Length: 419
Ligand SMILES: *Cc1c(COP(=O)(O)O)cnc(C)c1O
Ligand SMILES: [Zn+2]
Image (tube, rainbow, N blue to C red; front, side, top):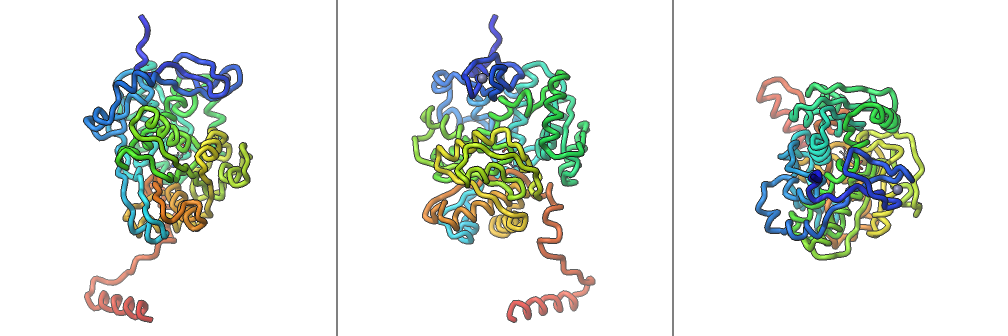
């Protein structure tokens, strides 16, 4: 009897098109091209209508036919369907007609968009019979693998660069995962993990499970479409580390149009990076199809990938959609975090600061016209990267518990406002 594969057909090489069985495998043995999941869209079109989607619980799994699992999800059933916020005050500050915030700072359970990719990778890993899971991470992935593995009763090894923020490290350790801190940057962590994955029978979510893992990012795009009233937004600004999320937002818009869930429309996907690690945006701005690897040096550690695995494909998506990339300094990243917090009451991590600050730049330069509407993908929570903003967000006013002292403080404040 044939093994059930749900709505998946095969893994397929993005370069030569050769097909492979749906196992834990990520690379073509002929040309080392990345493998991608292929679906049976004819069957999906019959099964998945707007009405079916809207009748389901509010999680990322309401689009399950377009996610790479054979059976019902067993890990992270509550992940996703985060709010899409109309950001009027931020729009006014940036001088644009309409801004929307896709707010994955409140994703479940570990407060970043990585819960989307991990719930898919671990559900699929279980289907394939794995009992140990692992990842190479810039922080949020480690948090999510550790938490979701704990809840699923899977053993977890997470590998991180040793210089990560305390918040990211504690958020992995607390779940009981084995946290391996490598003295090196992410690209070295990743290289080691590729070696380990070749030797041990573990499901490495972003190595041998990468084709399944990466598809989880599409759910952010499907939610944006549904929450926009089944319309493709004119502009979407996406942070880039490996570049995977950006390519999958694009894929989600394409799939939804192909299935008739939204009508075809012209749209632009823009990419955001920190200047201290901007191989993709530097290449995009120079009009190149290929990036040059860099050594990261930025406060946006979650985006610090100097050799982005999907950089080439991210450049292609921006070219195809007439999108732009840009990058911003550490100071502008902090300002971006403050802009979003002060205008909308949302505290994002450094990657969110990158996205907000790049959006501001693209609006100011006219690349996002001020009479248009844009969605910003805010991917992680500020409580995990406090180190980056401590000392930059003002200071507490300390007084003794006395009304007189408080009134003195108010007077001083009024004097400085009127001065
Ligand atoms: C991982 C991550 C991203 C982007 O990841 P890609 O590798 O480009 O898919 C964006 N924001 C945050 C907070 C992340 O943790
Ligand atoms: Zn190939």
